[in-house]
Length: 441
Image (cartoon, rainbow, N blue to C red; front, side, top):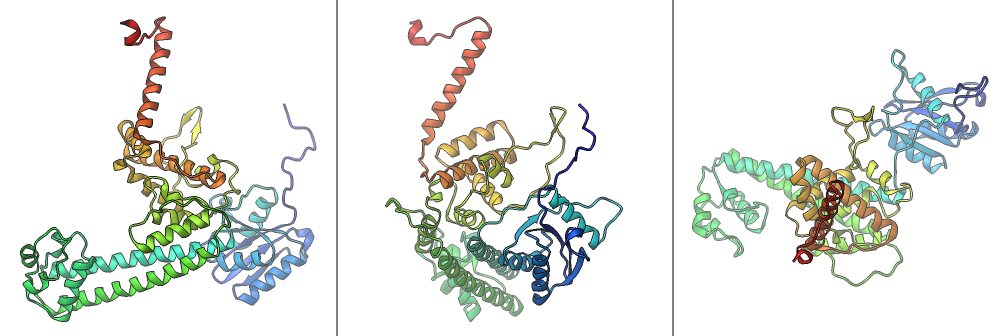
């Protein structure tokens, strides 16, 4: 049927909206031409410029603002406008891509305003402000952890240059024995037997083997590089401890006023157990009860998502946002070739890393992951298991139910039931009937 004459193709969804093209030195703002004599204005990036931009938007009667996620330039503008009471939509630059052939700051902000006014743009998920504060601390901790790992690599490089093969007899040179030996080397000790005497009783290698690995060439420049790498490692460890204190303090203000069952929490150290308890009080459920999800993964999920999932209408929307749902790039009834567009999602990546460790898990999830590995490649199996974990997390956070382990026997029983139903369907098509061995006897 044809479209009626005079019928409007697109309707205005957000009449009181504006579009902002962000930059490092200037922001261009566009509003409806009927609301201002100068519908496009340029503002600086200083704080007083952002305040002037907010006042002008209030004068124009703007309620909704659309801006692209451009680097980190959007953070000050987003936080100030959100504080001023605007509904700020942080949109994906790929969804707001400008028409080819015409590209300028003025056209970009006008294009954002037009798309937003017709409801063609959706804002990205952004948790509550207190959760964003926790997320910043957790991401800062992840950065410090990566920097500390880089310092450990520099320590190993200096040891290799000195031909000190301590990493072959110790599984972790940053453990108790490894750090005692390295600090003694920096302090000037060169006797391998004295260095090997720092061996902890839990180390599997004996003192003679450790002493053999500590015979090297003690050149001054290599020892100096080792000392500086140890100094950087110690500094990052202090920074991580300070970050952990801020994380616990922030999570203390996010605790829910609910009664939780008295069950043990996961964690090998006292700090991990304290963090697990804080996570449980914040989320209302214990995510670490799910196999393959440790305290670190649960902390990332709590910081990136938070306990409130009301922004996601269903579990399918939640899994799609995490980029762990099955692809929907289909045309003509057939999947499109090639890979789907890469989506950088910190929470989704944490779930994929947790799913990759399910191979050796003696649980229902571990058995399901091993079954997936038997019929598909590793990347697809990891994504499917991450999807499984995401559905469990959505159900726990939205319904408040604790995780109940079903066990490997339950998985094998379900597999056997599916195989039996499949055989019954095949026999029915052939006009046959399956009979159990006991009944046949």
